[in-house]
Image (tube, rainbow, N blue to C red; front, side, top):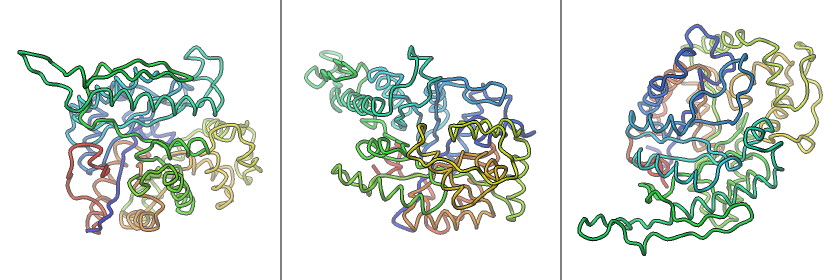
Amino acid sequence: MSARQLHFNAFLMGCGHHQAAWRHPSSAVEQLGDISYYERLAQIAERGLFDAIFFADGQSAGDPSSGPLWFLEPLTALAAIARKTSRIGLVATVSTTFHTPFHAARMLASLDHISQGRIGWNVVTSMFDVEARNHSMSAMPTSNERYARAAEFVDAALALWDSWAEDAIIADRADIFADPDKVNPIDHTGQHFQVAGPLNVPRGPQGRPVLFQAGASEAGRELAARYAEAVYVVAYDLASGREYTSDVRRRIALQGRDETKIAFMPGLVTYVGSTEAEAQAKKAELDTLLPTKQSLAQLSTFVGQDCSDWNLDEPVPTLPPASDFPGPQGRYATILRIVETEKPTVRQLLGLLAAGGGHCTMIGTPEQIADKIESWFVAGAADGFNLMPPLLPHALEDFVDQVVPILQQRGLYRTEYTADTLRGHLGL
């Protein structure tokens, strides 16, 4: 048994991460409003002994004709899923741009109680103007403003969770419920928030929910260095994964934190087959279901320009450097890397981006995928992965039932849960 063990999250999204997953005959598109669907997915991941399931979130509806984007609000869904699972962690995105610290801290602390200590918070700043217009803003604040607000937001939330001492509750029927000397205001006064405190939810089983972060920009990396206890990484290949983890670990150390305690989990799309050809056929089957117009529209969003008239069978046109790109840096840098290393045609690039938008993709037999996972792990490019199944539930089941046993046999992955909380699973 290796002393260092892999970590896995299951990133659950709609019918799967492939943009055409909902069109597949075996998709669960009719079940997206049924909480039992998500409960079953969480139970599959729990059978695979995953650290957590993860729900991203957004604040706009997108193009409703092109497929499901969001359906159930994540924190509401996690409250239900917590009652149908017992060990797996439960992580959701909560935007620091559109919430307030008291509101977010209260919801997450409540969920930590409901789940008995299994909650994690993916800290994001959000990014699109269409989201801002749903929250009384005409446009998103600048990146610097968003990240300054995010840092203050996290500081206030942490203070609120700490406003109740671990032993504050006495529950003496003949005397007092809680010791008032152990429940204290935080009196936070900052540039963005004024929060008196204390929180009106007592301290949760974990003390504080686990903080996740996924920023790839300079500001995002700095936020991760200050606060993250686990990091979701966008990395197309091993070299880019190693570059990112090395850079953010260096920043974490400069903050005086122990960089060896932070789990880095790149996104991972897998197609598993009994042969490599069978696995490739699974991807091709989904790729053929994706309308070209929709695929080019997604690419336009990723690269910040209209791609609708690009010739599918010509090389990808020259793209501006990342320094000149005004949108999300992580995804764009990944696309630049794909174009540089693969030199694909536009059609080939669309296929590579169809599931996960440029995250690492592994296609092959269970043994081949286990080999690649092990190579990333040994090279220090990943401490595990944020699994992004292209088609649910099938791709998640393939990974749990076929890849996980191989990793267990190699001593790289747990054979049973040894903790009850998300903090425990992550060794925190």
